Length: 316
Image (cartoon, rainbow, N blue to C red):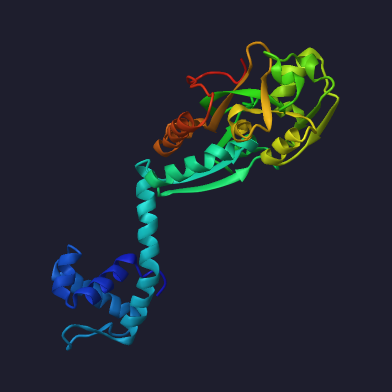
């Protein structure tokens, strides 16, 4: 008897139960009464028992019919959900969006972006991972995740599209009473006698090293790390060191008068933040909608950022 039970049988039994008659069920299923009656009789032959007591009005389930309808009540809702999701996926209205971030201070705008995005794209399955315990861009290429928020495009990895979100200035936060705070801008040599507080990531992923200190051959007096932006700001406020962060991440502490900020270099140290995704999926509507939502929200809420055109590079 293997392979004889089909979804159409379960849908037919459910329609008969809900309408109470073969005539009404056939109309709902867009079948003739004869076709539906034949389908039920063939199913009863396979089962070896009646599914309904036909002398009752409305039709009443026999034990075999009750067993199949219990199966229908379990399976059909799941099938309909998957069918809906597949339809949304085919129309570009649904899919999977598993994000990883390489930016400790991005939570300030990323979580509100995700909330706003869910309001318009509820069928998209979302998840968020920290990209500091693994290498997110290779994971993106493998298909383990679907988008990486990064300021460090990898030119050695192919098949990745980098959609620019915005440009931001990396500024140096110093204690409020620091003599550095009165300078129009700082040069690398100004950090020689400073303790630089950073996130616990390799220095090749920190712009203050790769694009400010290292090209000048300058090392700070010491380097210490902390996981949390708020703790780093508190360390700076208590004169334990200085830190380089995106300007928007420092606003709350600036408003309290605990710290002051300095420009790094005469033109400032600017970086571009990207949403990286696989090239073949870069045009999917639910992915482009997330990029648009991120650009809109950050433009509304983040101080000192600049819009950036497609195709811009990370440096400069």
